[in-house]
Image 1 (spheres, rainbow, N blue to C red):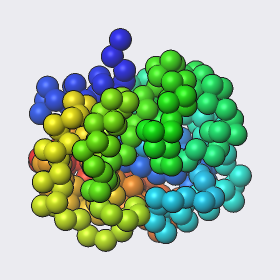
Image 2 (image 1 turned 60 degrees about the horizontal axis):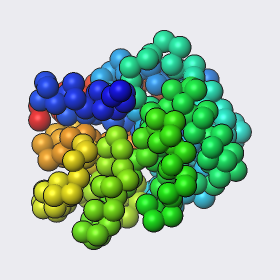
Image 3 (image 1 turned 90 degrees about the horizontal axis):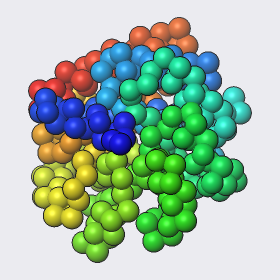
Image 4 (image 1 turned 180 degrees about the horizontal axis):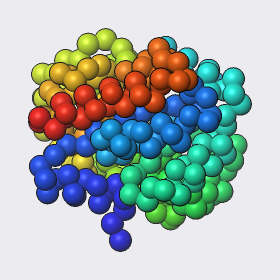
Length: 267
């Protein structure tokens, strides 16, 4: 059976469109707003959503997303809450893929077997664990694939051919290409560097390739969409959440995602 992620990418490919994949942290700005935000993102044009699992010691996340985790943790949002939120979202949305993005610790604490089972029950489609390199994650990801959950891997500008080939073997769903050296939301994108790297990745990778880290506006989203299969936007959306009130956050995020959708569709 085709996974939800595969189904979406196939559909987009038939219409020669690119995926828009927004990210935000579960529980930010408050736990009560997570499910409404998920629905609003879909409404505004998201093809799939990366939902951040709040974590106290992130490595790959810049200050913007770190603060989002801190806000969520102040509300005591943990992994089991995030899974409950996905379950609630699934009550009225059975199509949009949800990818959990986070770090190994909370999953290790729950246990990979229990976690994978729970993901399957609530309708999680993919899991991206930033600090689990392919070399060290066979057992962990065996549990995921056994339950039909796609392990999503990161590749970076510094990834060697051997690493790319290794990820190609283990990855499912899509591969997330980190477009710059540094943390999320850092620096300026070097589009020509992405343009050079993608064909190199395609030599090994048959899966769709999503590009993220540092996509700050519609213009960049458009340029990046031309080079890959999906555009991941995180820090910019989290910034919008941070600068909004609880009253207008859903409207503000929707407006931003609609702009990004229009841009990505021009690709």
